[in-house]
Image (cartoon, rainbow, N blue to C red):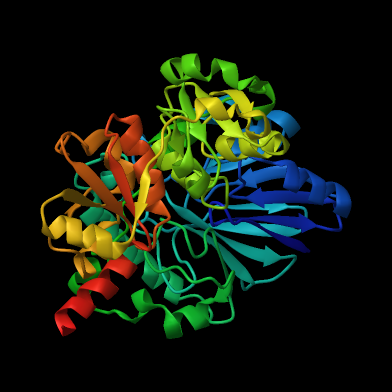
Length: 466
């Protein structure tokens, strides 16, 4: 048997290829939309990808099951659990088999058994893996059910998809699902769908795999025997879900265009930026410090790094064409990155190497924490905290107001238009993006607090000592 692990650091998302070396057949579990890594690995190992399997309708990335099915003719094993609201609408377009608790299917001499594990979502299933004639499973693909050190959050249907009343139901279902997990032999390996950095849980470990026995010994959720206490703990302090999660649920339920049919963006000169700022959403991918020193009015700043995809999901509108100011060398990869979360409307690329400096007429000001606090105490600035609720609840500046960075575009109406806004996050990374969003919304007098709340807290503590 062949087992390969694939990990997208930008989405903290894991997928797996299981192959039978005797028959040369392989299946991909929870594939990402970019299927090239699977095709390359299969070719290298002399395998033919004949199937995919999904643990659930994902909320944080575009699944590659439809892509693989349409491009390779592979069969898709999809959940038939849950109510009618969470059935795969695209299943009728491909060779799909809907599966339930206890169903089994084979890939060569490898057997996969379905275990219904609701809680994260109602339709969620896990796959027990048996090699050849084994009577005990060697491992379980848990998707967003059990992670290393954590479990899947039950509130996404309510918080991201707007399905009211599902959080408490999901938490109860999760409690019962964990009993099934704990009944498995301790030696069973655990292959989760996410690692540290994913918003599908609140305390995911960075170790890629685990075992049932290790999770029973160390995972907080498997230590709790009181259902009410478990539900309270599971539903408290979950991170705010990114805006794009609701779109992902829709896309992964209904289907999306195959990437080979998506047009490549047109590379254009910066002379068209004035028009494109009005007609499209223009995203400048330069470093925040460079953007602060000069940028095109109306643009927003999302630096192109490992966090680019997740912040694009928070800040970019799915229903509007996109123009990127980016390095010409990054065009192919940046399009692939955006497509991984369904942002297919990338129309234009303005090479940063050819950016006309005369167009960079807008700036914002960096100030120290001491300067910002002194101005705030005098009433000269409005302090805006763009951190998440957990960070805010742990500690915050008493004169600040909070709006989550990802919600600025929709929740900014109460901000003052006649006063300088001094914006901060924890360390100064998110606040630079926030400054760009605020200026694009018309708040032009913006200060960015260097070092964020960490620096502010140092100043405030020093003042108390005095």
